Image 1 (spheres, helix red, strand yellow):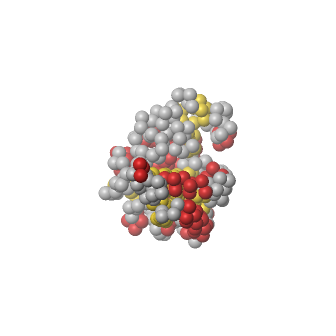
Image 2: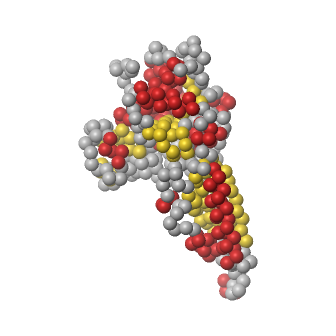
Length: 414
């Protein structure tokens, strides 16, 4: 099925890409949030052209797009593959120093600086006996999220170009900025991209096919007090920070929070507090797989806010809801062939599918509602956003094969 003489390039590409510091900045108001992301994007354009995708280019917003023309007479739906160049703001991606644990034989993996990838806390490791695992030195993240996906897409396109006997329809490629700060689709031009369906290559464990995500809103709450000179404040000052503390104490301790929920349970989660005596703002994220539950959680928070204001007579509040994304399952259910073809590709590669709901979101969440139905497929990485991030070389190569096989499946079923 695959050319046994082909030398996969995804790992070499990946080890080169992680040397680029592409950390995005959640406090920035520019797009991309940090222009250093563009350094990798510019070089990706060059690589795409080098392997034969002549129309490869980067637009004014930093999106890299390219086309692999069809080599079949069939009328095959145009499909796309999407990955993001940026890495998470939480952990530095500068001076990444990857290490390779060859022929892993089980147990903990101790990184160069003494940090440990514990086998007990990483159950996926038990399935990696005999594989070659890429880690960091323990001082940075690795960047498998999502430079592994980029490398796999690039290698898959190279394979298809080198093997014209593998029939496929038109394939579209896009590498996006700022996914990690929730802005990866902000300037994504679906019409220009030109695909009917797409897949993000941004998942973890080998076999993952993710067609369901959280639905998500943000809630910003302003507690408005009254500031008076503290020397003369008796009976006059209303300290908004004390209002915010009172409100936080009203939140449930045993439910509705990330630390007390799992599976299909949703949550309300304060992520930032900033303020002074006059005004204190608390930012929340709200998550659930059922859209209607978001409204329930938001109403619940509003009631707690009202109780807080009642406890501080003369105070006031603002309550703002910001829609972020919705469960892509609502759209993907209308196009079952997208998931079915991915499952068929895995079956042909003897990979057991892992169909799970993501307790988070992907660019595919927004793209699906922008008119481009887009589930998420595995790229092989683990422990994203942490210095203990790792990926197996063989899983990256298998993800490359999955992309190639998926293109073949779409052509055969056209």
